[in-house]
Amino acid sequence: MIRDLFPDVELLNSIPPDEVIPIGAAIEAGILLGRDTTTVDEDCITVECCGKDILVKEAGESGADVYTVLLPSGTPLPARRQHTLQSPGNAASVCLELYQSLGQTCTTDEKVAQIVLKDLELKEEDHDIITVLTMKRDGSLHVTCTDQGSGKSEAVTIEVAS
Image 1 (cartoon, rainbow, N blue to C red):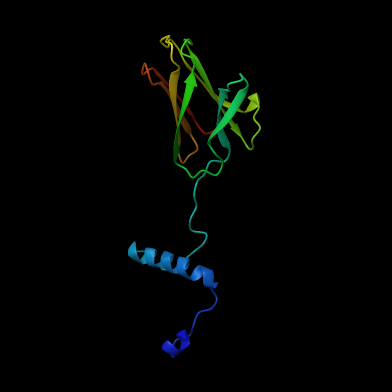
Image 2: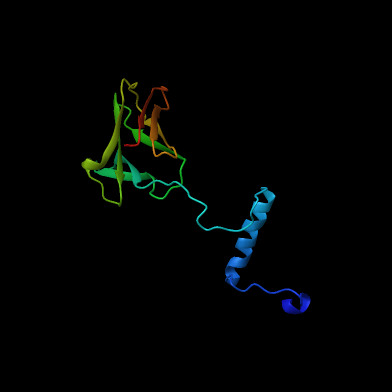
């Protein structure tokens, strides 16, 4: 069929049929961006990503520790996540612990940060604590905890070990 339309052209059949459109789209994108070469090199793209899960430790309804993954391993960097924790209104302070893990299990040896919000206003309803994690391309992690009611905030930055 196609050979009949283009009799003087040698057909390229070294690319698998299911990859023809994506490769063509990548070449076209390169042309539109003004690249000098229009060849597709599979090794030319590298994406920094989070190597381990970043978890926050919370107390569940039964009082047992519950670990919630905020940044899963493999997350492309830079990345930003926001998580809202609830703390009893009769608590004057809140302690947030962050851990890193390769799997679903977590031990205290893997703790990477601890943030304490002090002098919170005592009230009947729960405190809503907004936690924002920002991981940069270099792997450093910036964590901010803010009590939504009072606006009190604490922050910590975990630098990459050199």
